[in-house]
Length: 177
Image (cartoon, rainbow, N blue to C red; front, side):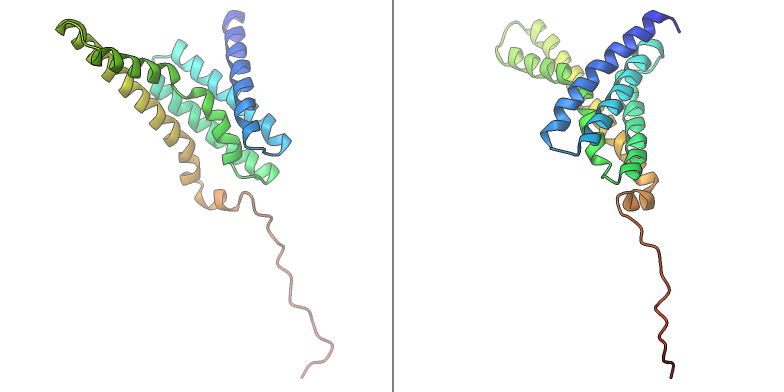
């Protein structure tokens, strides 16, 4: 891997981290959760960027892998600092929401409604469905990817934020009957 690729990954991760900090601050979590959200967003978004650019995966599959990675790390950090994994995972996923595809979907629909010749309307319908389905698949990939670790480690995910009490023997009474 050359320095140009590493620079692109770091830049992409940094911008995703800034966005995640903005999204995390809205929900007023503990301070350490904000920095963990930023870290997870940077790792997830940089991973998706790498998978799209340098592997044959499309954006939906790359989003699934990145969301799964964010979900796994969220489970780990939830156990370490006793906060629900949701506090880390959702702000980390928000920079990966496909806003441009959603915008292009609505734009194509508005232009289609505006009328025009039949050839242009056919092109707009194709663009509407292509961008709309891409948006839908990316959103499903994000949801499934971040939820899979919870389903895989169901018992652990339930116990992540609970402090386990040590079982003690019942007190011995001085008087026995």
